[in-house]
Length: 198
Image (tube, rainbow, N blue to C red; front, side, top):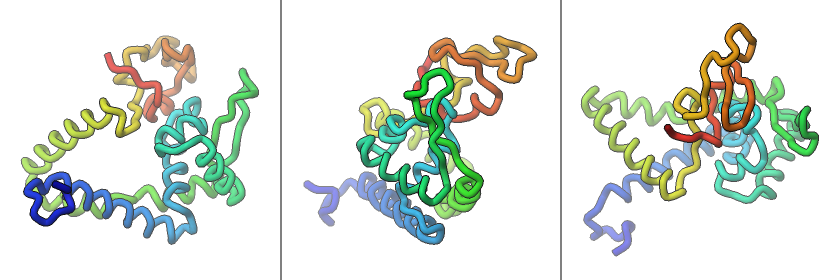
C-alpha cells in the first residue's frame, strides 16, 4: 500500500515527506527574494561550508545528486551574477575550485537562515523530546548515508586521517594524512567529502 493512501497506517514516512515538502517551500521562498534558484542557493551554501580543496564541480554534483553538466550550468549562472569565481589549482592547473565573491558571501548571509522556521517549532518541545528526536533522526540519517541516499561530509576532527598540530607554530598546523595537505583551524571546521571514520 502507498504511503500516500489515506488508509495507510504508517504515518512516519508520510510525515518525512511533508517535512521535506516544507523545507523545499522554505528554500523556494528564501531563494526567490535573492533572485536565485534553490539549486543556486545550495551551491552557495556548499561553497561556504566546505573545505576549499574539496569545492569542485564533481563534489557539488554528488551533494546535489545530479550530473556535473547540470552543476556546470548552475555554476555558470552564479558566475554571471558575480557571486562566485573559478580558481585554477596552483599545483595542478586542470583542477578548478570555486570561491565566493563578496556579493556571494553577502547572499549566503541572507539565505543561511533557511530552516529556522523548523528550529522554532522544535524549540517548543521539551528538552527530553528534542534529545530523543535528535537521536532518532541521527540514526535514520546514518542508515540513509550508509545506503547512499544522503551525501555528506564531516569535519576533520572526527577523521582517522586527521593529525592535529602536526606542524605546531605554522599558520596551517594540522595535517591530512589522506590528501597530504596542511590545514588551518578554519579548514578543519568545514565539511570534507573525503571523510573517513575511525
